[in-house]
Length: 554
Image (cartoon, rainbow, N blue to C red; front, top):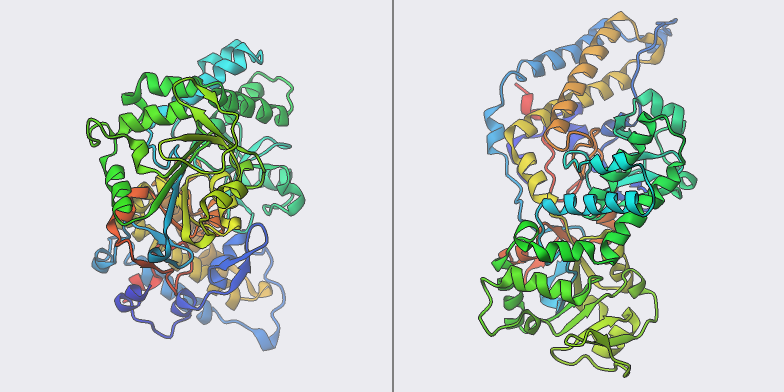
């Protein structure tokens, strides 16, 4: 933000004061606090509508057309710059798609132990995996749960879901929520049909989801939830089109059961290992990162819910071009734990069992030490800490699932790193001049709308006001639509809503992840003794840059 101040010097206008004012703490989704937008920006929470009647204007609060004209002049002056991208925009700093973004200060020199999840953390998958999971799940629903045979014709649509959606079991809607628990106006789908604002109001009464309603929501937070969200929407849409009666909670239960079956039965695991070139991405940089940690004297452990044979097959494939002929990926880790049953691992008292990789059996002897080159199943955090003597603050754990992977470690005192693969692509889009151009247009029209409403009393909203309001609102809607279209066509960006608020997914990242990045090996770009500090002046997620309205000032 400091660099923005150098590029766009502050002036005395209310727009600039609003843009760079210190953000106030505001209650977040779930009841905690976070850095928010300015008051003007938060006015987007409601739909702004002009009154039909001007009413009697009180003498002591009379607003002349000249004062509305000042806002009109600011708008017209800004619109003159809307025809081309300002040169100064190209000089704005770009965010690093492979950067590490910090919610809570982290000194890497204090970290002595690095722990990793496997799926979507160490293992990088191609987009083909979602189609595999989707197809296996729909087959289970048709063959075992007796869903209509026509469901076999469904195809996974990668352009539909994003991570961080919620499914309302009672109403059957897929929802994208903002940081404060409100439904995004264009982020509510029943089946594959987007509901209008009016339909959302009729269904929920208000866009804000209260605590009682939140209990009926299911968060879809990890990468495997892409196929789940798409299959839920497709099944709901089929029942609607076929005019069949159904209970929306049963749809979720059956789809979730089918997705869980795909994983627990091993169908997905065997499908991946049968054609690893189709589903897995080789990654020599990961090996370089793990070896660097070992050379620095760090302890490493692998903690995953996947079975050992699947992890072993995947690691061998991903690292085969980088590992020596006689080297084993297991030598990189001090402890390897499979089938850990997270998140129960963090709260249960399940004992560890030593796994025999040759016989595919579990030993009956008590595990009171982790031996080199041994594999362990199940277990719990309590026993893990007793055996290793690794203290919480010196441990950092990497995972992709905010609830299953990171919530437990965060509460236990471990430091946490969220791996969010789509972060790279979203930062690339946000770095584009075209996106930042629309963002600046959105901000200036948003701020002028706020200024118009704070200046003009309700009783004084006459034709001059209505005309300006409609033009500002149309310009804001156009900018919002352009930004949204650069991301997912159905739900927009993962981290932001169309209104500029952070999403509920972003809230959970802030809550459970000390740092976040797209891949573990991005840590190679930072010294192992680095101090990672949260930006002191941010209003939104650390990887976001807010393009100021001063971009269009003459």
